[in-house]
Image (cartoon, rainbow, N blue to C red; front, top):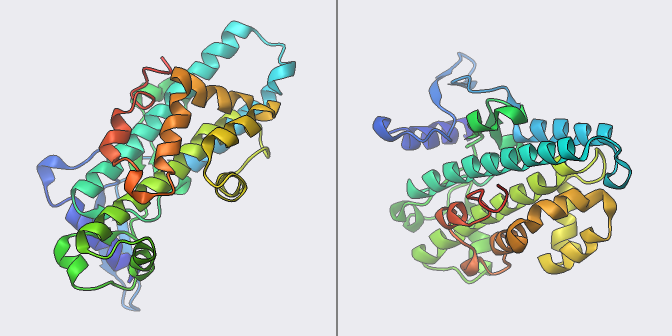
Length: 281
């Protein structure tokens, strides 16, 4: 079922061959074996994921050491951090652009995370040539109004149950909830990429960061910033989000807003001053 759903998702996104998004992994075809196994073949657009990049960047931070004890050239240090910021922003822009394309074509991703963004490079010096692409569409959900009105499918039942619990009952409200739910996942990806590549290995990971934001601070990003500011190990992550008078924190707060109705759509995220790169560059 999951392979068939991914096949259908890619087919709907690649239907317009003249307007295929460069930030969605290209499906070449699929086949079924005699034993009933379903296989899909994708174009080889890179062997790395955003999770791989974050791991390598974090290991590099470990080699450098804590900010308070660094002895290497301050100019070289700042240039390296600028390259990292530029790379991360390009990575996020590509992922969000792919998400915007999916939403414009009536599809939710529903499993967006560091492992579901494939990269053609993890070399920060090649950030200008970076092309992030969304993959893992097995859990994607069709949000055409005809599909919403026909009732939930096996893969979307949980989503629409949460939508109802949040007060989204009509097809229009459910569609808005689904899009906002993807934006929330994109916000968690944003948080992951704002922290893990800028911290030493083992300081923070995706699950602990999510727990910190959701459970400890109940999505109050201002309080989370004060906490992180007191920990030298998180200093570079705080400085990254502080760019542009705290524009990174502002965007992250908007994407993780507890009220789904107040979260921005993907296009608004792309146009935010933090995402345009103006704040970092």
